[in-house]
Image (tube, rainbow, N blue to C red; front, side, top):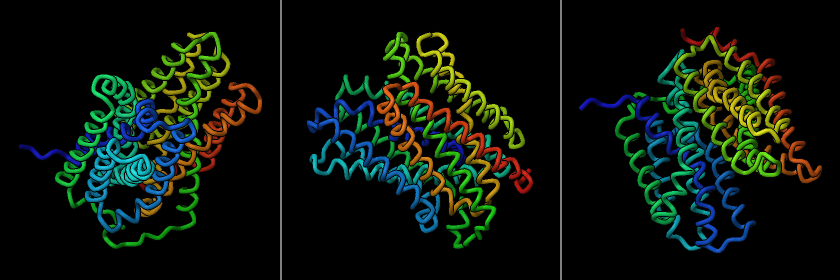
Length: 386
């Protein structure tokens, strides 16, 4: 039997990261009923996953340097699967610890997978990372309805057992099929120098991704409620969310299949403009369902390629030094995912208007445009391989 390629293994297993990242939401009613949690206690579950994932991303480079990529990714999936498997079995006092455990492993695995894909595609990082993150997005999009359906039919324990078992199988596949030749400079014992230019690139990329994930999570969290509070209605809000994620999937797939490194300027700038117009439409046309849906589609199409393209270009610019900094960059993105949705809610409560709160997303997109222009990501092609 032909041995699967490393890219195929990464693409086949990465959707589980999307599943694990988003599964708390659809499982929350069952979790609350299982342990009789208050809303405040339920919120702590998300906080535990978020904080642990951020810490895991910070530690990712250190772990990869000592274990290598195959064992880092495979071990992270295996331990993540173990934590998910036992989540329904532990006493209430250990719930936060178990959730933090699989959150930490998510933080370790996601930067390591992106680094592995970049190392296997010199000169084609943008295309490969767009395709890889399409796989992650596929897991994140399909998991919630599937989890809700399966949970109703078979119970929360069956859902957790299935996800945990799939994570364990993914860990075994990574250990078996990822070549030991995927060796980073860190794993080889080298210490690439981090100059002033690379540090600036890391700060710019971290800020860009902080704002991006904040906007993405902000729209994901608040768009349905915005529709519910107007004539658009609950159904329109749910449809807008589906359209938003489907558009992200489609645009990442298109960017992965059609783009080359040298088209990054087009993808980044056109994506930012389209996303800004889409968010503006969502805010302006909340009482007009057709235009509300069109705005959510435009926002998703514009935003889809931004995250993987920024990661790819940072890797191309920083070279070997990106391995030391990628975890910190991903940690910054996770912080944005928590901070900006919170800020939207805070402003909405203070002003009595969710539309004003969502203006934070427009301000963040303006900040991303500023960072992209100032950072000039496309200069990375002067040093990247053809």
